[in-house]
Length: 114
Image (tube, rainbow, N blue to C red):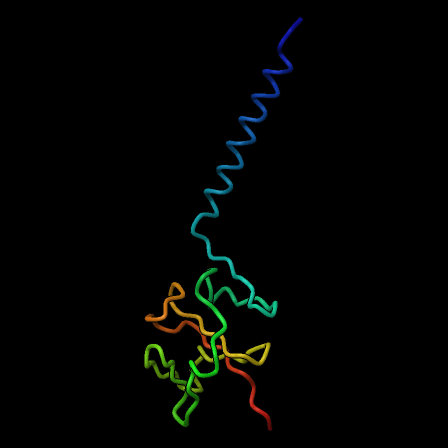
């Protein structure tokens, strides 16, 4: 009796594993968006999977000069391209590596009534 089919099967598994590893290695470090708690996806330009999160209204101060991020003191003018309309009417803050002490990448703000 020949054992060729078993060896062939093991070889196929080895090649498949190698190919899967190469595919995964090719995606390592690539930024992928993740979803807000209410289900909409943070844009890839704002988020690499860890940068964005919903924040309390008290964490952002809206004033005549723009939006102040309380944790950093950063002031973002209302006309800054970082400021975006929030799809769910809540504040979402995207900062470098999701850190509370880093600069803002995007700020999603609730719409204001007319």
